[in-house]
Image: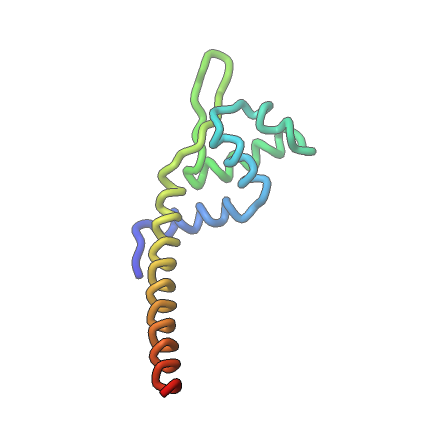
Length: 114
């Protein structure tokens, strides 16, 4: 099984390994937010949230825009789509394996039931 950008996948999955970063992405899925808005639900400082955002930015999962004095953070879908495609290939392979196993078990039931 091959996939396009192994380093990109590594960065994506490393970034997604942290629950705070996943929660930040979940919040950003509803729309852009400032660092302050992203920090509000967490019991951590804005600099700590900024460190998480840097990891997400490095993985290409978020980007920052400019809106006057505000630098809204937005989610970027492409790395998630690439990770999903990688996982989907494994899902399809495993599903095919289970279907072959089901067919074999059905055949065994039929031959033993005679």
